Length: 66
Image (tube, rainbow, N blue to C red; front, side, top):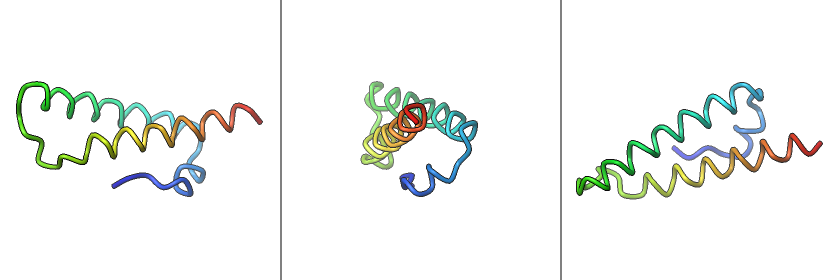
């Protein structure tokens, strides 16, 4: 499931960093499966992960700017 901006904003900074790390690891795994020629069970998952990571980084950047 994709993360919503509201959910991200309600997280603590530590939770955001932890979630970012988890998503990056999951993305790396999915890309590895795709690179090996395997068909991922959910083809839209890589895109969803990239968007969630982007949302997290956006909110983290906004918080640092304040």
